[in-house]
Amino acid sequence: MIHIEGLYKRFGGYEVLKGVNLHVRRGKTRVILGISGSGKTVLMKHMIGLLKPDRGAVKVDGEDICKLDDKGMLQVRRKFGMVFQQAALFDSMTVGDNVAFPLREHTKLSPEEVARKVAEKLDVVGLNGAEAKFPSELSGGMRKRVGLARALVLEPTCVLYDEPTTGLDPITTENVDQMILEASAKLKVTSVVISHDIGSAMHVADDIAVIHQGVIVEDCPADALRQSRHPFVQKFLATWFGKQ
Image (cartoon, rainbow, N blue to C red; front, side):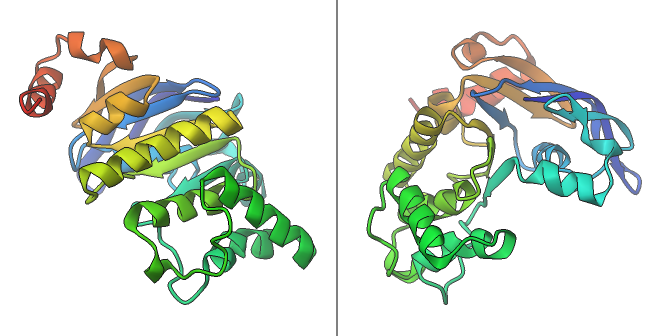
């Protein structure tokens, strides 16, 4: 679904991306794994056109989005849903209103149709009947699920997850991982996960790319990552596997 070719991006005197090549297979879960400051979030922002590269191409369904105008980019962004690191829910709104927000902003659906779609997406993420609750009444994992329901409500073909397990305890992390797997299985969406959590990455990914200092240093199926011979990847993995 997404094909990135020779991507370069510099901010001032600092080169963040240094010729990144990456593909995301349709219907699969691609994890982009790396430490803080490695360039993974900048890379994800290029996928939805929030940033334009200095050089290179970002193709979504075969179309180079770097060449699109604002109207063209709006159409491309409708293909994507976004689950933010801290869920980014509106605390003053109910769960139902949070999930309904994109529908009210971007469609002309009737209130009855909005309610139907909200209930449908909450059911997908295992929160059937939670419309009247407020975010403050939910656990961290449940807030993530509401964030996913909101990301899914416009029926995107790809969902982006920005550090979905950061700051979560092990049990909640397991629940969030399961949420990602279930969304992929039930809805057949393509998923891109930005993470530094090796355990979570190994659990949810079909494919893993490791980014280090603006370069993809490993790109392989998840079950082959342990066999990487790159020195940084070996060191990075050792910090996690050493605890097992």
